[in-house]
Every structure is written in C-alpha cells, then in structure tokens.
Length: 196
Image (cartoon, rainbow, N blue to C red; front, top):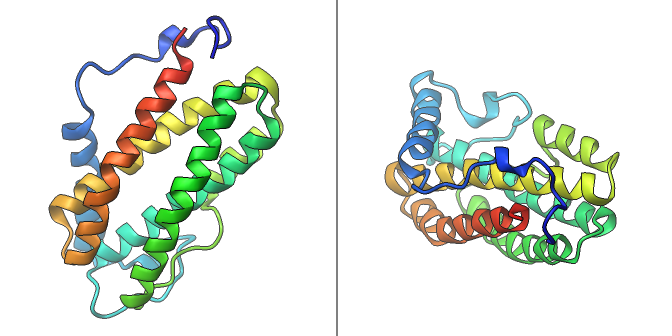
C-alpha cells in the first residue's frame, strides 16, 4: 500500500516482541475455563454442534473456534476481492482465501474423524464484522479489513499455540502446530499493508 492510504495508522503499534506469552496464555485460559466449567462446545452459544465422547471439551472448543476463524478468513477475503481498491489488499485477500480454504478442508476432515461437525456459518462477532465491512468500500474498507485481519490472526495464533501446547488430542495438536506459523505469517503480512 502506498504511504498515506491509512491515515492515523501510527496508533497501531508494531510488535517488537512476539505476542505468544500473553496471547497464548489468554487462549489457554479460555480452553481451561471451558473445560473447568464442564461446558462442551455444544453448550457455547452459536456453536450447538454434537460433541464426540472421545474428544475433550477443550479439543472440541478448539475445533469449533479454529473452524469459525478459518471460515471467516475465506468469507471476508471474498468480500475484500469485491470491495477493496488496493491491489496489495486484494492479493492478501486472495492468499487468505486459498490458504484458509485448504486448512478448512483439512480441519473438516479431521473433525469428522473425531465425530465433530464444525460450524458452516460465521459466528455473531465475525458476522457483525462482515456486515460492517460490507457497508464500506475503497480505502475505508481496506483500513478496517486489514486491522480486523491483524486482530483476528493474533487471536487465532494464540488459540493454535495453546492447542499445540495444551491440547489432548495428538492429531489436533499436530494440526495446530502445522498451521500456527502460517497464521503468524498472515498477521505479519497484514501489518506490512498498513505501514506507510
């Protein structure tokens, strides 16, 4: 993106240190809290899905959250291809569609093996983001889309790192470990798009 396309982006700090310790801790806390409350992913609002008896509540939660995030990356990427005026943003969006579609397919197969049914529609927060972005175009769209991508990829990175370290199911841990570096790369790519 050319300099000046995103006025006021100096309020979005570059990260000198990785977000892993804090973000990983937050995601781990979410997974542990879910398990400690005795809730399963089928009891989470917006995620009324059957939970297999062989998968821990934390692992089931990971599948649902990871699938929801991946689905959003594809849908919001498609929206960006329609609404963005910047070729860099459009290229980024196309990469999100391609790479997240492959990861989504892999996760869906893995979930099916575990007896889980991942979500097929956006969760309420991501639907609200999609609705808000749908009302924008040009540089306003680009700015909000990229900032949202940074935030969502940081959240997903924390989730995947927590699953890698704390997940019970070895297949789901391996999936998370394979995809965490890609998610981190996507966050870094998005940050580069907002720098002047």
